[in-house]
Length: 88
Image 1: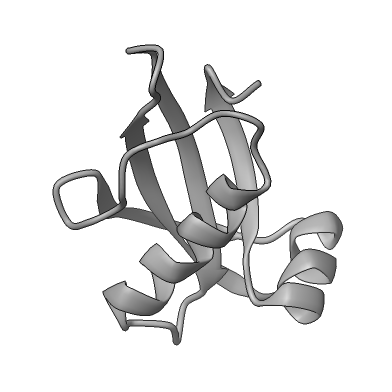
Image 2 (image 1 turned 60 degrees about the vertical axis):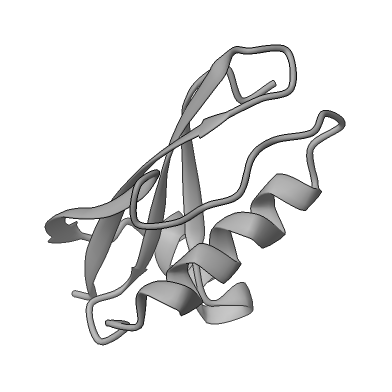
């Protein structure tokens, strides 16, 4: 079973709403910049503009076991996103 690191992320949108999502990466990924880059890649897929991601917006939260879908996404692109609030 793959253990993953969960990075809790909040980013302000251009319409003043705050997006909340988690970036899930393999536990071995310890480089915060790499996690921020994954988050920015995700944000580029959105039809609205957002602020940048840094240690102020994105912090390590906890470790958990990965589901099959999370493992598949991590194997494909290196990360998985769980959308929580204002992500659409």
